[in-house]
Every structure is written in C-alpha cells, then in structure tokens.
Length: 356
Image (cartoon, rainbow, N blue to C red; front, top):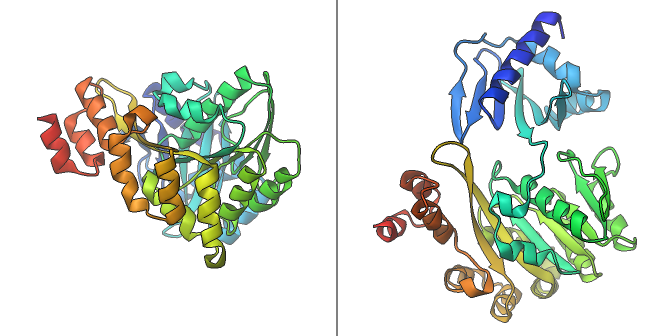
C-alpha cells in the first residue's frame, strides 16, 4: 500500500478501536461501515473507498497462496494482523466485480466461561474424557470465542493433548498445563477430514473442529468421539434442533441409523448462541442448551428431534435451557431491551405475554 492508503487504513481501524467495533466492512464506492453493539454505523466523515485502496489493502496481508485462492474462488478467509495492535478475521471477496473486505475483531484476551456468561452445564460437558459437544448459532454469535474460553479452561486445569483444526486460526493459545497444537486447514493439514482422521489413532485427548463444511465430517466425528476423544465442534445452524437435524441429514443414508445410534451414545450436549446489544453498551449472550439424559438419547436415536423443544423448556434441573427463557432472564435483569429480545425469540407473542 502507498503511504496515503496506509494512513487511511490506520485511521479507519483506529476509529473502530475507539468505538469498540466488532466488525469493519469495506466496499468500493461506499464509506467504511462499523458494527458497534450489534448496530451498523457508517463513517460518513471519512473517504469513499476506491477499488485501488481495497486492492492495495488486500495485497498487503494476503500471501501468494491466498491471492491465488481469491482469484480462483472469488473469496478467501484469513487473519489480518494490523500493525501488531490487533488481529482480525478477514474475509476478502468480490462484489459487483470489485474487491471488498470484512474484518471481525479477534479479542486479545481470552475470557473465562463465567465472564462470557456461558452456562455452567457447558463447562460441565468438557470435564468428560470423551464424547461430542456441539457449539452452534448464526455467524457472529461468538462461537469461536466460546470455544477459546473452553480450551483455555482445559489448558489451565488439566494436562491434556489438545489439537485444533481451524480455518483460519483466530485465537492464539499457548501451552499451560496442556499441550495445544493449532493446525490451519490448507497450511498445516490438507482438509478438515484428513486432519480429523489423523487424530483418531494419535495420542490426542481433545479435538476441536471449527467447521463441518466437508462431506463425511459427521461420520468421522462420531468415529473420533467413539474412539475415546473429547470432540468440540462448531456448526452453522441457528438452533439446537436445526443443528442436530443437519448433523443427521448429512450422514450417508445407508449409515444414518448407525449414526443416530452412535450420536445418542457419544453426544454430551449442544449449545446454540445469540449475541444481543446490551443496554448501556456491549453485547449480552443468550443461549439454549441441550444436555444428555436417557430421554434425550432415545429421542436422538429415533430421530424424533421435534420433541426436544418441550424437553429443553422443562428440564432446567438437568442443565437445559430454552432460548426464550435465557432471553427472558436477560430482560428481567435489565441487560437487554424487550424489543431486541423479541427479535430473537422463537415465539415473540408468547415471549411478550411472559414479560407482561
């Protein structure tokens, strides 16, 4: 980048840091846009972004392999380290024929599960020596932050061999009580599937998977969990039930009955997350939690997943939580507004009645 382009980049990212933005969106012909406390803010006092600026910025942090991927696939996801001050998950892609860049801040500090407001039942799941934990929710719901908090908890309290399979590597973890190996797909392992397959016969206690985007991942996860490892997997799904529906539907039809049976045995729980604007600034975490009981195991085995909603609503003593109950608590303690909570509710009218 030229000196002028570097100064503009620094100015935009300094403003983002001052306003504690979680995301920065840069597109040709538009002003820079920040996401602050869940709301988009357009920086109309700054320059309209040009194609040359965005090309120069992308060129400054993409490696040769990533540039080739961008050219072939029309998008690439990587990590952008800005002036040794901050790390961003960077997506560089084409829109309307021009390069665009979206940046998501990766916090330097890995917060504890308690500080994040994670349910105690989730931290209980990772005390198990083997099994499968699924973390799900829409993009931007803090799934990677949750997993980093869980791993740092294990790292500080247990002597384990932990291996992550990520694309890209966002949080940087250092060995404490545990050995942590972070493998980036495309650089340290060819694919998620090959990386996961490699762990099954290795001396690895915990495996983290940042995406289930490849065919065959679900079956391999079940095999890995069945082999005696603790597996933590991030999925793209909005709810606990939709995550399990997607997991089962992605199994080979000829192996689906087997998969449902094994899933009912190895699944430790599923957590689906949401982030909502907090009153006074910042973000609050809402969630729904499914923990394993004999009733849940039978439902998963028989693929009667529609029955899980009522179980989550009535099984708080087992550590389960419905999303609406979580939202209701956030409203009642004054953390989030009724309006923001209702937008995330699965039953807005029922939620409104409960608030009343």
